[in-house]
Image (cartoon, rainbow, N blue to C red; front, side):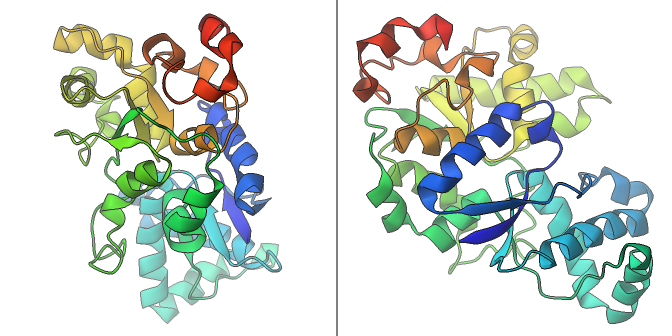
Length: 310
C-alpha cells in the first residue's frame, strides 16, 4: 500500500524516535511511505483560533501535495493532533466549493490545488481499517504476552465523533485496545484513557497541565499497567518528557513508560528496542518493565542484561 505520508513536525523534532520507528515498521506491514517533506505544520488548531483562513490554506497545501503522489491510496499521519486539526480544516474546505476555490487561489503560485475527497487517516485507523486486525495478528513474531498496556487516546482523535467518523461501524475510539489485543498484549482500562493529556495548556497554566498528566499516569499505575501507548506525540511529550515534573505536582512516584504506537507495533513485529528508539524516552521502558518475561523474551539474555544501554 502506497501512502502520502505526513509525519508532522513534532515527530521530526522533539520525538524523532516516533518518525524513526514508523520508518522501521512500515516495510513490515507492506506500507510504502512517500513522505510529504515540503508540507508545513498543521497549526495544531492554534493557528485556526487566530486566523482560520491561514490554517485552512496551510492544510489545503498539504492535501494538494498528497494528491500529487502518484499511486497513493490515501494520506497517512502519525499524530492525532494533526488528524484533528486537518479533519476540521478539510470539513470546511469540502463543505463549501466557493471557499475552497478562494483558498486554492492562495496556492496557485505553486501550481497546487486541493480537490475535494482526499482520505486522510492516522496510522491507528490505517492499521485497523486498511491493514486489518487479522493481517496484523498474522505478522506478529513476538507477541506482547503478559504486557499490560494502557491505551491513551488523548483529545483530537476521539472527538468530535461526527467529524472524526466515529460510529457503530467504525468504533475508532476503541481501536487502540483492539490493536493491543491483536499484538498479544493485555488491555488495561483506567479513568484517563480518553481525556486530555494537558499539553494544550502547558504554556498558559503549567501546574494544571502537569496535574492532568500526573492524574492520568497515576490512574494507569493504580490499574497496574506496565506502560501506556499513544498515537499522539504531543501527548507523549506531556506524559513522558514532563513526567518527572508531574510527579512533583501530584506528589507521588509514577515511573510509567509511554510508548508511541509504531514502537509497540514494532516490538510485536520483532524489532529490537534500540531500533525503535526506546532509549530516548525520559522514563525508560526497560527500567520498569520486566522485559525478560514479557515483550522481548525472545531477544535473548543480552537484551535483559543490557537495559541501561538501550
